[in-house]
Amino acid sequence: MNTAPTQTSALSKRKRVAILISGRGSNMAALIAATMDSDYPVIISKVISSKADVSGLEIARSNGIEAITIERSAFDSTSDYEAALIEELALDEPAYICLAGYMRLLTEKFVNRFNGRILNIHPSLLPSFKGLDTHHRAIESGVRLHGCSVHFVTATLDDGPIIAQASVPVLPNDDEEDLAARVLVAEHQLYPKVLGLLASDAIRLSGMRVVFSDTFPVTNSKNCLSSIA
Ligand code: GRF
Image 1 (cartoon, rainbow, N blue to C red):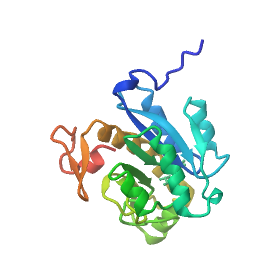
Image 2: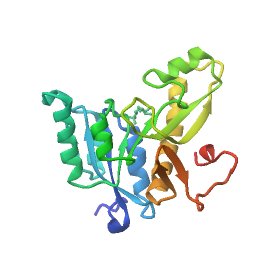
Image 3: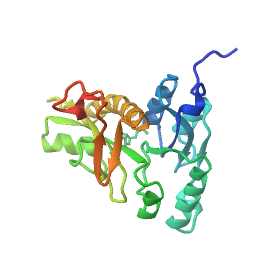
Image 4: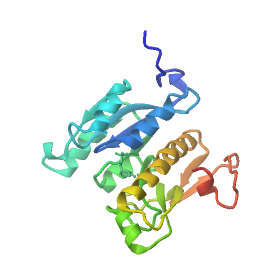
């Protein structure tokens, strides 16, 4: 009998979260791993990839999670593609949608449908280095601190309200791979923490501001953003 932990226990009290991916899915895997603790307030209800045959899909399935592909190329328009995405997501009514290496910009219509409930992780300390190639650009620019940000998603690329950030040093001899690997470790810690706090109502979005509840477990009150990393 397989006695490996699953995310199914105490299902009813935990919030459903859908994850959108486009590739390797290591952040998705970190979120799934967090749900193996039955006290974590989230279960992953579904994974949707914008690309077929990516390793993230296999990782999700091997954890017993429904994982499907919806590709833009199968539709005549972005509007039709997003309508299909919304239809699939609506089946589970997820409390939150986590983008985890999802390589498409969502339209305002999609974002408004799930207003304040879509999160993304970006591999830079936003608002620096929006977009692609963040590690290369960080090294080129000479910054000594780099990192990752979890933010609410708007229709503008990497632009929504920042919830939390984790920083890592940029060391003198770092190449892009060294720095990417260091940031990725921070990503895998930060994203599950933020999602857990959000799902337990310790964080909420008020207009375009992120509000932390009084019970937020701040250990370093001067900088609650890095204290949860
Ligand atoms: C991560 O660096 C994430 O921050 C960015 O895309 C990358 C995805 O990696 N948005 P993975 O698919 O989670 O391994």
